[in-house]
Length: 85
Image (cartoon, rainbow, N blue to C red; front, side):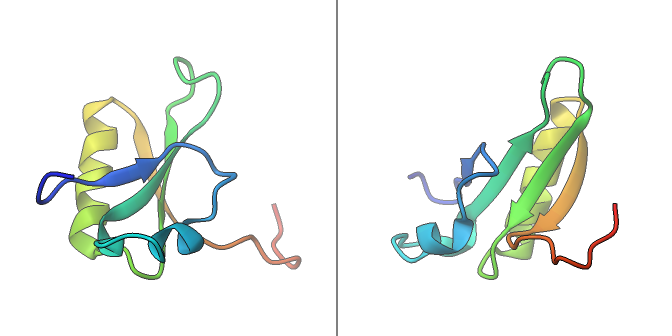
């Protein structure tokens, strides 16, 4: 990767934590989860691992806004069973 480049996965089915273990720069990994249908849904979930740098999160949020999407920051962990929707 180029210095300063972000690495992103676009699916919510991949856990970020195991991926960070294999990276030289785990702080540069984020998840960009587009909601379907992508052309109609404004939301994009910006997922961070425990090792994601805050500047990387800000860059990912800015990227989502350039795509005219509404970024929603999220942690890379499953929802608890007590979560109310």
